[in-house]
Image: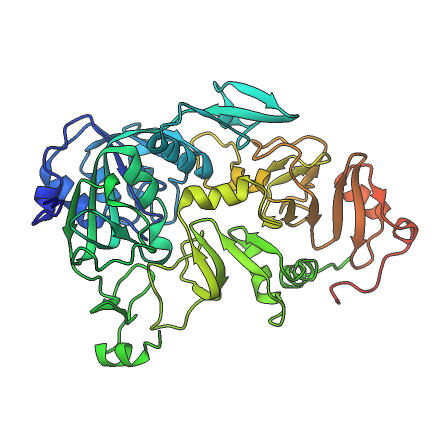
Amino acid sequence: MIDKTVAGTAEAVAGIADGSTVMIGGFGRAGQPVELIDALIEQGAGDLTVVSNNAGNGDVGIAALLAEGRVRKVVCSFPRQHDSWVFDRLYRAGELELELVPQGNLAERIRAAGAGIGAFYSPTGVGTLLAEGKEERTIDGRRYLLEHPIRADVALVAAYRGDRWGNLVYRETARNFGPIMAAAATTTVVQVDELVELGALDPESVATPGIHVDRVVAVGYRPWIHEGRFVGGVDVNGAPLEQSPESSVAGAVR
Amino acid sequence: MTGLSRDELARRIAADIPEGAYVNLGIGAPTLVANHLPEDLEIVLHTENGLLGMGPAPEDGLIDPDLINAGKQAVTALPGAAYFHHADSFGMMRGGHLDICVLGAFQVSERGDLANWSTGEPGAIPAVGGAMDLAIGAKQVFVMTDLLTRDGASKLVAECTYPLTGVACVSRIYTGDAVFDVTPEGLRVREAFGEHTVASLEELTGLTLQAAAPELASAAEEEGGSR
């Protein structure tokens, strides 16, 4: 019997070594595996290279990991945001190395790693500062840069539902980097809102087949979802609105 | 010399987007264009974090943190929407499947080089996001910007001095003063607003400009932002 489920987030992140490259899913807060990151902070691994689209929001998730001094280098496309004060402070203090990668190249480099591609030519970034040091080649009259895959020791991914084989479905734009990061890491650890029985996920809707997943842990529904239904009642950061739960449930029309 | 307001300019750009177009509106002012797309036309908005068929912001109480746009604001998904992962989303862009992308700019050069991601100031934290992918991906790249900086310098230049986002990638530039097409012969004034003429625009930009129609060379068009 295949059973990739683990009982808790501590078990899910066990064994992550100092110096690891860790991919962390999410775009801003959507799809960010906050519970797994909290467990990684608790677990204690340091000197990490983090590969993620952003470099932390507010004081939670990736920002908390950075604030704990566990990260040596960040590979991302968009570190500077209105709520990226933790990254900003550490970067300005020279305590964090940054590799800035255009978002599409970041995604494709991660995808390439999972797909066994040695390297590829991308037109993005040609003629810019981010082309420095990259091989350029003209193919059929268009200029391209040689881009190499980004692999990781560990990927931390958040999905909506999963089963014990590691099959995953995502929710809305929280899918973002999940499927490609899951395929690009040696060990892929996934937090889901809900674990379901094998066979309960529609095979037509599985976005990450279990072959790419090593460990799955259920962390429970987020506040805007109740028993598998969207109920709202939160702001875009997931914080509760100042209203009674009854009115938010009554207001849900989807 | 009164030209178009930011909102009138957004409406002017929206008027050039045909039914059936797949469109990405960049973060910032370009998102205003969505407010002026006619409701009776089916125009599909793409957001690079993984959604085609993006709809307007939800009502309070129905905000869904899993459903956001590239600016990380809450949005909705219209009937017919589709979700996809990031590599597919940027493949759509890089693969030339988007019809139109509307972006902001610090500078645009005469041959359509775009600078919009970094002022190059020492000590600034660099952040590029999807800007470089958007700049080279769509079939047509529209820039929405003021013609002049707050200091009165032209944002249309012979050569960009800010770090480039993309080379020769801009198709058309919409400003509150005029609309310019990027052509092999340089910038061509497609439409001038207020009392602007090619001569007055040349004075503001310091560039030699082409005129799309003979009347632009002398008298200004009156229609402004009307459709």
